[in-house]
Amino acid sequence: MDNQPSNRAGGSGNFLVQGSILAVAGIIVRFIGLLYKIPITRALGDDGIGYFNTAHEIYNVGLILSSYSLPLAMSKLIAARRVKKRYRDVNRVFFSGLIFGILVGGIMTLLLLLEADWITTSIFNSPSSALPLKVMAPTIFVFSVMGVIRGYFQGRGNMIPTSVSQIIEQMVNAIVSITASYLFMSWFAQKENPASYGAAGATLGTLFGAIAAFLFLTATMLIYRKGNASRLGRRQKAPEETWGQIYTALILTLTPIILSQFVYQLSGTVDNSLFGLIMGGKGLDEKERLSLLGIYSGKYRLLSNVPVAIASSLGTSMIPSIVNSRARKQFGEVKSKIRLTIKFNMLIAIPCAVGMGVLAGPVMQLLFRDSRVLTATLMQIGAPAVIFFSLSTVTNSVLQGIDLMKKSVTHSAISLAIHAVLVYVMLEYLEWGVYGLVIGNVTFALVVCILNWISIGRALRYRQEVKTTFLLPLLASLIMGIVTLASYTLMHLVTHSNLVSLAVSVPLSMAVYGLLIILFQVVTVEELPDMPFGMRILRLCQKVGLM
Image (cartoon, rainbow, N blue to C red):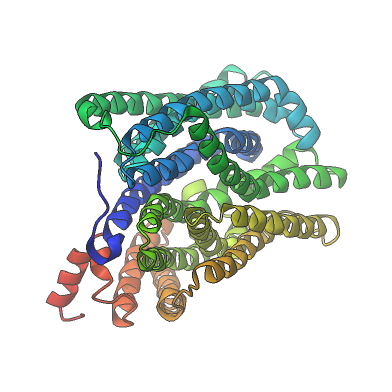
């Protein structure tokens, strides 16, 4: 469970494989989340899912301000000490993180429990979201402690405990959320607003899922530390850091990450708050506003965030790897890892964005039984956000890995200010309604991408190769999109079945895209071995004469 960085090809292979393990888990988690949100949306309705998502936005802010960044900070601190063979300091970082997590997680949990009514009413103009927020609040305390354990393993280059725990967390979350939402809607059907109680039942799954994941990670940690007691107790040549030095390093590492994540994630909270206040002033009651927010957050953003999970996972695995390479002054490795991570990420994000735009209507109809033009149009307009959020997530991780975390804070703050002004103008003066939120979502990530790109280029004298990273994947994706639309339309004319048409067009489009990537020579023979399943793909392509 203590993987060492690979020495081959700049060590790219190991961190990409570890990142892909986390990415696969992330996709599974998002897929489970997508599946369980379907019955919940049907049970709660658009207004109920709006209460749920408003509570979730507030919970996310509390989580980010307290402990969301603990896994990332812990992994960075531990990786930096492992490469210098400071084994006792690694243990001190772990135990200091536990104490810190218990303290800040407990404080934030109490704050949300006590102030839920004021926050939901005064800031979001949605008093019905207070109850689901109170049910969800204790999850922050559980996540705080759990995040330290995840960061411990990630700092050692092992993403498996985090990956398995995420899947366990989401599976328990799905089972409890679906069951509780239906039961609460039934039990409290006579209440004034049963959808609020149903949303509270859905948030109950978040708490139970976190508890299940925490129990798994605790058991894994106990087994690991027992089996590696002799290695963990090894002496180090350098003097041990004091507890004060450890906490200083922890806070100095956490603060910019927290600020960056806080500002970066605040766009959704700003959207909900502005939409509630402005549209409420224009005459929309709470149920109407939350129904539109339910479509925006519970359908559009839910689907668009699935591919972004890959970028998040690759970024998480890349940070300790970059720290390792920089500590060994292998700056060529740093650039190689950045280049390969961004390229691999774009190979997935670009076709996902095109596919979501082309199949927006059929997918919404299949998943949510929602054939409204509004819902499909939101996805079509907002599909580019998949590319920009994926790229901004990875480039934020690069800035954190090369100790330019203040840059990611500044960039997110600038983008958020622009975003808030744009959304305000689109809601208040242009009266674009929920369409304004989608456009703002796209522009927010785009601005972050541009600013991050400039800073990375200046700091590392680095420029990403454009042709095979962006242009050729985009060309292949556009051709794939044409094939997708044509095959879906043809199959629907023949079968009149949305499900059958999607079942044929989606695998066909994936095969076409994969073939075009090879034919356009987007990925080279030298790059493939460093990518997940790359050797298998290379042998297959060589066998059929494609490479």
